[in-house]
Length: 122
Image (cartoon, rainbow, N blue to C red; front, side):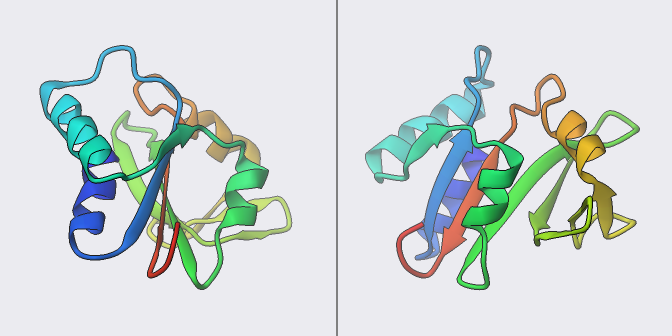
């Protein structure tokens, strides 16, 4: 997710990464964290789901990574909520119960990360 935040920043978008601490970043992630600091890409503490949802809008897209049943990370925009479901357009079902999403978003090695992207300050 840090590589995604840096890459989108390099394309001229404003990005910020919200994340739990990563105690064992891979070498590529370490490199991307250094790039993010040099380019002033904000790295902030992870948000809860309600706060993450409240920070997304048409002008500010949230991208999340969550665990799949197969144990692989999957990235999707966080497009809001409907009732008790979180809307995830790139998930095969397009939505997921908020409780299930939170469990998958906090899975080991997923780190509850959110990249906020906008054309103006993220």
